[in-house]
Length: 209
Image (cartoon, rainbow, N blue to C red; front, side, top):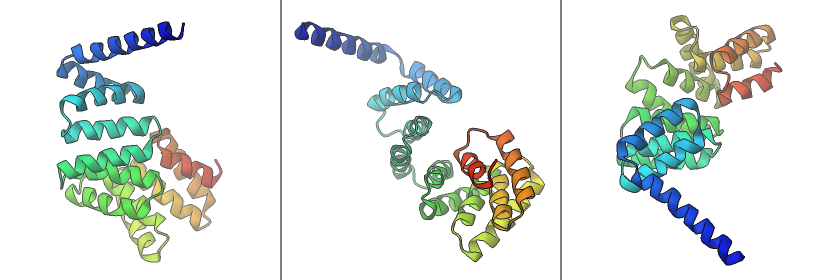
């Protein structure tokens, strides 16, 4: 009986592997993109793993695998995947942003700041990178960091009232100052913009919404 079950399991594994191998690279890339768009981390990771068997040194596939791992909650593995991508494509601001954001969400603020600074300086119009940079600076808990965080966040909120990083940073700052009403208003706006963002969940818990 055990031998029969083992053979069945092996046969099923072979079928699944053959199914993946029979797909073209273009089909797998489409499946990966679709899964990431839908937030299906498991499917995205499966597609990325198959693609990496064919293109093990592709920084974009490694980055997408990192995004998939974040979706399923494997934040440390995601950071490792981003780091591999950056080693293959040093200087790419988009990869720095992905790793910096992941480090920030996992509480590794000191690791997040250099990447987020690179990303925001590489593209001064990237409000997402600038906003997350502001959050990271606030989380340093230093006077200089909080002054810079407020400067960046306030400037971006004037440009874009829906900038998620700026909203989170300003809400944290307001809460730290005891401005509870302001903090809750900013938090409510952040929840409307990005309800699934882990930083928003952290902020919501802190301000008591």
